[in-house]
Length: 138
Image 1 (cartoon, rainbow, N blue to C red):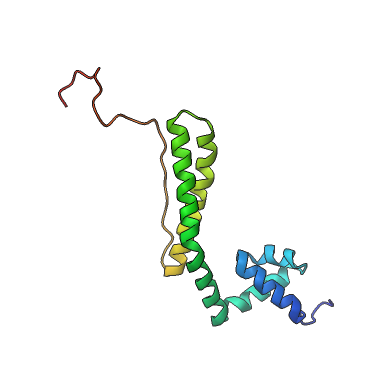
Image 2: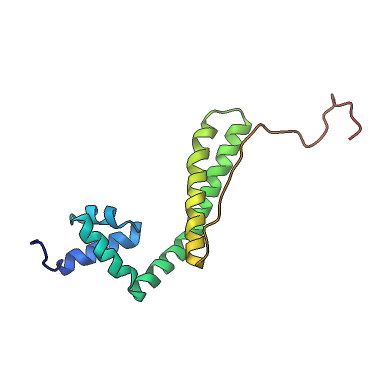
């Protein structure tokens, strides 16, 4: 494709599908073998297209509940493993929290609001009920 020539329609269609899926112009451009600068230009055009914007909104609305469930299950697994003293819980925890943060950004962007700040503090579990060895009256 010569510099300054119009991107072929089949390439534009392939880029549109890839950009819809991953929402990263540079990565979508690499996936369909076009220059990243062309990908950024095409992404800008797509971001202005109401039909494409609605397609993005619908795709995320359909996928978000499933994604949230997957992340929730990952966090539950991590917490279960950590409660058992297993070291694999920590390996599950960070990716789950990162995904939770990303989902927070998606839901906030869809609502047109400011992205929430998600902070997760992990520490040793503390007893909430007195044990038999506890002599206190509380």
